[in-house]
Image (cartoon, rainbow over all chains, first blue to last red; front, top):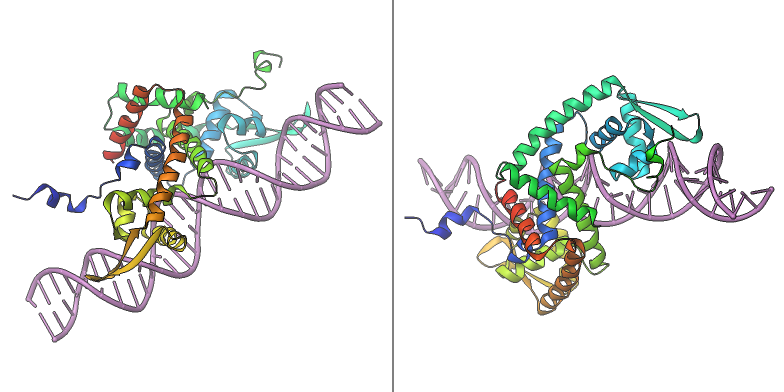
Length: 152
Length: 152
DNA sequence: GCACCATCATTGGTGGCACCAACAGAATTC
DNA sequence: GAATTCTGTTGGTGCCACCAATGATGGTGC
């Protein structure tokens, strides 16, 4: 009995100009993705720190500059993240004996453990984010975005 | 010590954990997309204001609350954007005679003109962003992201 | 009528993020 | 050995998403 427009009364359509705009759609999706992961990480950590932990786990001890480069985080932002995680006991910091400029940052066992906890939380968020897509569609989405990223 | 990684000194590989993480890839792509559009808009406008202009152009005059809802912008953030564009002559603001609470915001001819200018600038940014993808791939990317968005 | 609640525009503020500039000290290059 | 590059660090900027509260207004149930 209710007309279509009536049903839509609570819905707020997005302008077609925006819906057709790749950068807009990408950004909106990123907003919800970040919201989901931020909530999943609750008060335990942040996306940035998770990225740093991931890099240290995969590449082993590295300087802060390298850590920033491979995660896309500014050197100055790496500093605060590293400091916080050193204080939490997740990272260890020592000067590079071969290069007096560098601080070598190392993942502690507690840090590795922490990383795995965060990884599980974030995995849940991914599922929540992509539940509308099939596994192959999710893969295709990631592949397309990766190609966009690598081309820049 | 001496190893292959030495040769790669200029390249900075991203951790596999991150590269396989949809939310990470989406966010990184959004960062570059936003950087490109922000640079395209230079000092002329912002992404938010473009979104508001697009909505007003497509849906006609509307209250600020509606404007915020259909663009996903917080009501409080709509205020500053509207004020700025009113001052620039792109928007007109008048009280709703039928509802004393609302401000009806209308796109002026200058605003419409401005919108079209911005639209062209942003279109260039899209091309720059997606130059690695074919048109059909770009469409598929937008479709996938749209489905993710609509499912949330 | 009237109390109650929803909605409006607006103010103010918060935290995170991406980014930039400058610095001293150490290393590398020429 | 001078010049240049790189490092960690400090400090700061601006945008963005988000939240809380408030006074004014509209609508609803009774």
